[in-house]
Image (cartoon, rainbow, N blue to C red):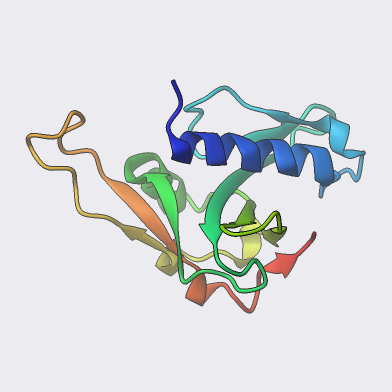
Length: 150
């Protein structure tokens, strides 16, 4: 059974797939496909040109205002890619808590910096996944570059 955060993530991926054309090849939104769960650092692929992107979703009070931080995923794979200079474009799906308002923002890979990605404290030794470390995306360092698409 999926958690509320997993359901929100799946909704965000589906919303982008239904709404956005591939940013690289410009084919219609039907060319974007979800990658398997737990695929490292990417959520969508264009089945025509191979374009890869991340999707992050968040519940907010106002979809017109980017949150200061967005919950990322596993820090290890993200850090490895950043050290290699590899960043994936980011779709940020905001869902209003009190209404049906939604928005999609886009942050291209070439406008991302290592300073945006902040490691979180590792999980405690008593946690189910003890020692696992996630990360946060500091959107304050990206607000000028993020483009609202929908």
